[in-house]
Length: 113
Image (cartoon, rainbow, N blue to C red; front, side, top):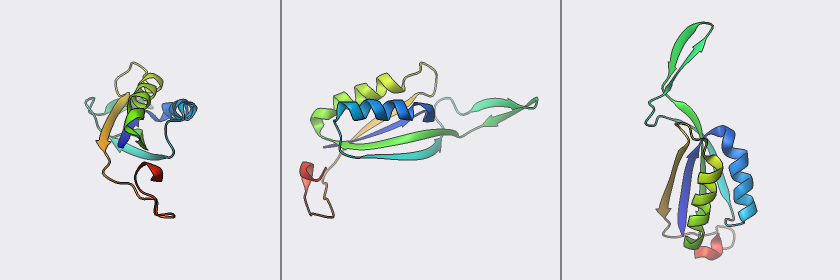
């Protein structure tokens, strides 16, 4: 089992969720609003003629735990649907999951997903 964590632009969340839902390759999803700083080191914006710098950019973090076989599909879907071609499109991280336990039933491993 793997945990797939994706950091994407907030405006792409609906599109990514719909595409992942159609693929039916996961059983649960966690969404978090986050702020962060990547390679672009923030952005400069203007308001009423005054320029100001935003060091932390709003993003959305998607967390999924999926079977090893579904990781390539999930990565492909996120890349294709979250990509705008502009800087700051985000990143995908994949981690090993040692163990999963469903609290309600005590099921373990992939049965707990």
